[in-house]
Amino acid sequence: MRVRVIHGPNLNLLGKRDPEVYGSHTLDDINAEIQTLAAQLNIEVRISQHNSEGAIVDAIHECAEWAEAIVINPAAYTHYSIAICDALKAVRLPTIEVHLSNIHAREEFRHKSVTAPVCIGQIAGFGVSSYLLALHAAKDIIQKRWR
Ligand code: DQA
Image (cartoon, rainbow, N blue to C red; front, side, top):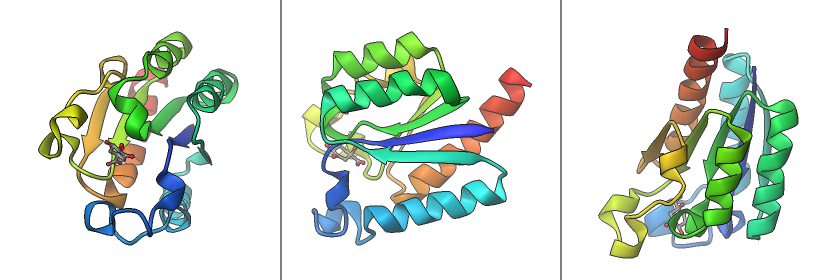
């Protein structure tokens, strides 16, 4: 099973950025936890982080060649990127949107996700565990739908 994990803008600053909202884990810590769980679940993961919208669109396009599911935290682009929404729709891979924080309990502009409607579902508010829960969900989806 092959799952691509894509982190959006500013997530490279985790650990330093708003730790009261996002916790003290760095992106490397999170990626290490993702890799450990993926190995336990027999999932091959590829992980990348991008600050620009176009780079995320390119990463999504690449998924069509390799991945069976996508786990994506589009970060701020969640709330307005039609380009990322369209890219996810175009590759037609089962996608899980994740957020470290509970975006629905924060400022109103974070309540709307333009990307969630083209995803299987959204996991938000569990910190690092949002990604780990998403990996379990990805495995479940791949097994149930595609095997
Ligand atoms: C975030 C939530 C977004 O609103 C914010 O812009 C982020 C991180 C999260 O993981 O909680 O950068 O996606």
